Image (cartoon, rainbow, N blue to C red; front, side, top):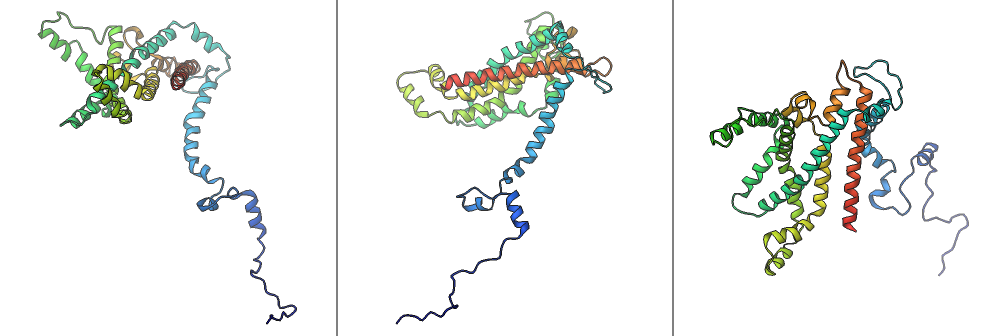
Length: 334
């Protein structure tokens, strides 16, 4: 029996909802919803939400990174003073002065020499140290902690300790004299070359434990089977280190080299603690950051514009080193 349909009594499955208000339509237009086909939590996520979470980090990067860099670049074309005041545009005069300044080239030589000596040693020595402490032997945790302890110490405290060790009447000279190995004290803190080499030693000593941790993490990804197979084939420890360990941690070596190179070009504390406020006798050991402080931040004779120009030169030198490291990394991967 067919049901009887009564005109005007048709029923629909779903009644139409109320029309969206004007404010809601305007909000949807200004704040579009998720992309078509989105599901799950993406249905409730707006396009601006990721930017909201990253806004504090972006603001910090702009305030403490981008703005100071642009301000330094602008100041390098002026004769601004460290304590402020009227500044006039001088064009490229600061850069012309910098290229003819022998003190600038001396500081550049010290910074580059610092990087040339420290970077290879800082790449290899922590790796060798990590290989030594990698094995799970009784008491190995104590040695790992001991090697990492200098990283936790303040740079100033470490510098004062090295002053005591390297002074003319310090521990090292005293021991060497009592052992009748030297007659006169070695001028670690008065000879310009010895000050520079001592500062390099301080940098190496303080950074070994830090980069050792990098290599310990990288060594965990080197397959143990390769070492076992090479050992069964008669390969000694040196050959395994050269042909298995080093290729396995090559990316970590590139990272350590880049970070160490940037840090070496920016070294200041070590020179200041061992060479004094003048940067060695007659300023012979000043690096670029040390030179920037002297020429750009002195309240009486400083020129913030010229110091900014030297800062731009340091930035370009650091950028060149970073690009070179990236190029070497890409060539290694290919």
